[in-house]
Every structure is written in structure tokens, then in C-alpha cells.
Length: 348
Image 1 (cartoon, rainbow, N blue to C red):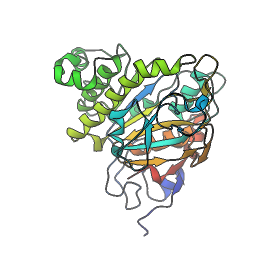
Image 2 (image 1 turned 90 degrees about the horizontal axis):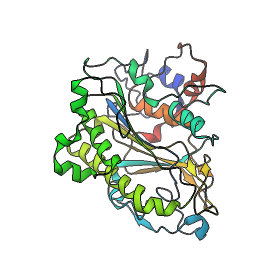
Image 3 (image 1 turned 60 degrees about the vertical axis):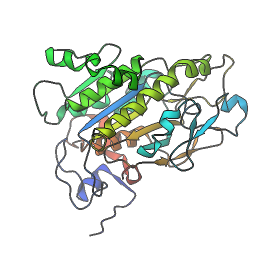
Image 4 (image 1 turned 120 degrees about the vertical axis):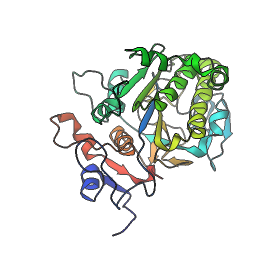
């Protein structure tokens, strides 16, 4: 049998070809696997930048575009060949060899709630819907112990401090000054430190919510003075910490938001909602390292190479964690996930 799979399969084809079998959790690998010698992640950390990350001011800069598109920020080379990021992300630039950068996420939802639902479920939201989380299917995998839940969401105050063990888990002060300094004294830094503690406690899905990214006015001031320094320190610290502890190979770290920002800077020096092109970072687990997937046009407005839908992204995240969505589930809105293509280029 050919050991190298075709570049794209949908979930049904992947299953029939000998991929993950049965129910909603991982079965042993067959010889036909996207992961080659890698294993699925046992944990997933989602860093959710609530409000909409500006791709042009972070991970998809356009240094040769007019000023009203590129903005005031300069670019910075990274340790990954020919990959540029914003100058205010120097620590992340040094970690890009461990990251797959997707520059070609495209959708059609401009409302925060609807776009969040789509990005975290891979499904088009119905006219009436309840908030859904990317980690919901992780609840269906067998849990290793009764102490902690399968998933936890960390805001400025975590949503699940149900017992003494969980309270201790969220006490980042137990880490000491070294790690507090490493992650930063910001809310995002402390929450990413808690996320690492959750990974060590074998919690399967951890969501870190960082608010304040919906910047319709004075976006570059907010980014430069607040959001980007905190993100740069917290994200790079988490990747480095997991790497040093030999946890990165078994932990998938996802950095994303509900949509991107408009290419043209508006009259208030901000950027508006833009679902047509956004960027996502994947690191760890069986995903590829030091790779860029997709490309946008010269203004960052539209995807021109390797478009990735929310369903394809969510499908890849579930696949990387050894989760197969059961076709027999009685949920009509899973059709997009079941039909989503699995892009082999995501994986190492």
C-alpha cells in the first residue's frame, strides 16, 4: 500500500482509507496515516483572541502596500525561512520554527457571535443558536481521572473552580517568580501559565480567552502598547515551556480569533471586521513545524492560495487530537464537518 496519502481527503474517505475508526475518539493508527511517525495530541490549548486579530498587523504583514493598508508597523524576519511577522512580535519570531502559520482562513460571517460559532464548530450557525466551544467533543473522550473536567475555559477568572484540586491548579503563584516573569504579569501571561499547568494535570482541552481585540479605532496604539507585547511574551513562553518539558509533541496549541480585520485603515485609525482572510497559528502535536500555508493578495484582502474554511480548520484540529466525529450523531449541523477536506499539509 502507498504510504503517502493524497493531499486531501474528507473525513469519510479518511475513515474508509484506514484512518481513525469508530465513535468519537482515537483508535490505533493504521499504516495509512497523515502523521507518519507522530502520534495524536493528548491535549489542546486554544488561545482565543476575542474580537478579531488583525492579520496585517501581526502574521500577514504587507510591507509594500500603501500606508493606509500596511499601517505604521515594520516587519521582522523569523527563524522560519522567508517568513515575516510584525516588528512587535520578536519572541514569537524566534519560535516560528515550531509553528505552522495559516494565512488563508476564509469565511463569510461578520457578526462576532456568529463568526465565533463558525470558527469554533466549523459549522454555519443556524438562525437561532447557543454558544458552542471547540472543546465540546473532547468531553466525549474517556477521561483519565475524576479530579478534573475534560475541558476548562480560562478568562480573567476561570469558569471551573469546582474543588480544592482545581483551585490549586489555577493558583499560578505556586510557580514562583521565574515563571511569572517568563510568561509576563499580564492577564494573558498568567492565564497561559495556568494553561500549561492544566496540560500537566492532563486536562484535555484548555481555552484561554483574551479579550480586547475588536479595535475599530486607534488600533495601532492599542496593539503596540498593550496587546502585542502581552501576546508575544505569553505565547512564546507557552511554546518554549511545553518544548522544554517534552510536552509540545503531545499538546496542540491553537491561536486564533473569529475573523480578521479590514485591509484599509478606517477614518478612526482602526480596522473593521473582515472574515475573508485571517491568520491562525498551530504548534505542537502532529502538526508541521516552520511552515506557512496559504497566501493572501497584495493587500491582505482575499485568499489567493490554499483557502481553508472554518470546517477544514476544525476538522484538522480534531484530527490532530485523534477525534473522529461520528456520522451517526443526530445533529444536522455536522454535515460541513463531515464533508470537510483533511489537508495533509497541516501535518508533519
